[in-house]
Image (cartoon, rainbow, N blue to C red):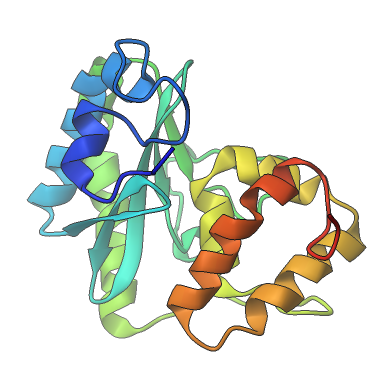
Length: 208
């Protein structure tokens, strides 16, 4: 099933990653009111809306700032480069038990978005200021540095993140090495998407 490439499709039809796409059972449709509110907040901050990983991503100064997602039990706003955020309100949740930084706001009603709007705007502004200044999050030392694109994909995709961090260290390194070998960001992102099913299956990059 082809994934979406137009952000409007996400809000009206879903992401295209499952067979609930464009049906009344699609999570994006079920949480449409709250997602629309989050979209308006991001656009009201003059963020550029695009699509990455089949989800709306909001950018500023050439950097990913935030991503919207919808699931059966909740909908989410995920802050990218969350290692730079000062979570002054202590509201951020990690994507999984081994996430590098808490990066996610989880909602179960549009009313929650309305209450959290000032906090969302303040956190978006933090990341916009860092993007404008060119500040980068602190590097987490490892035997093989994690490619930025892989880190962003894991932050954006809770299912992928949980499966990746459940892999053995050797299998994790196999993906970091293979993805890092690509010279262009577009190629690295393409490899991540290609590897997604293998990661979910618990396999390494070189396993069949």
